[in-house]
Length: 282
Picture 1 (tube, rainbow, N blue to C red):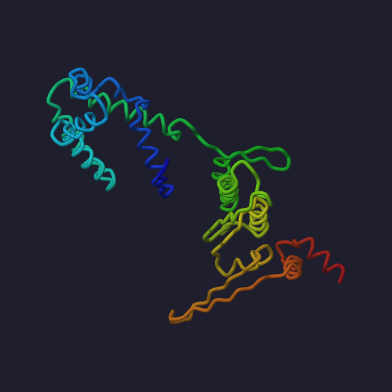
Picture 2 (picture 1 turned 180 degrees about the vertical axis):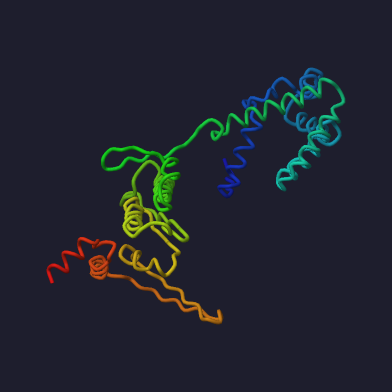
């Protein structure tokens, strides 16, 4: 028995899955209570098998009331794609006005209200609140929301990078930490990374990403070179000519000895006390 497997991009697959959920008899919109005349067609013998069902559906879509519904659905979809709220309201009003009987008006309005209620309940953002909890070395606990209001720019920024690392590690290596038995690229691209963080926190985050099996690719300004050279494996510098007609690219691969030497003379690493001790020794 031959089988045909059709693949699609992940985004399209998720959209198709959502559409199938909406069309499922189990989606709580009350559609099971309205057969659109199908029950009578079965009782009358017009629908007996797959072929007669397809013929009945074709007639309803091309010549029956469902033709209007499909046209209205196409216009509603176009309005939603263009974020045209006024057009969407107009399509809804027209659909209600075109209902030829009280029963059909009740059917379309009741299912519409039920669909909105079900979609609202299906969106976790309507009833879940997510928070990032943090605890310092002394055991004091705070939250991301409270820290963002009181802390400096760097203090508010650091937890986001931790959350990004946790999310990417979970996506790249679901259910397990990376290791020899579960290799992966673990690529993470960040633009202007750690812009508000000091040297120690920036380097600590780079070490965190590495420990979680993530490979960082960072675009950063020149003033971050000294901070990143101590912890990055490769530094690629892009130079643009003053007239913007040419570009020169240079790649460096700092050795471990060079990293240690930079660390030893970095004022942020040595600290004031370190310089005082060095001066006293001299």
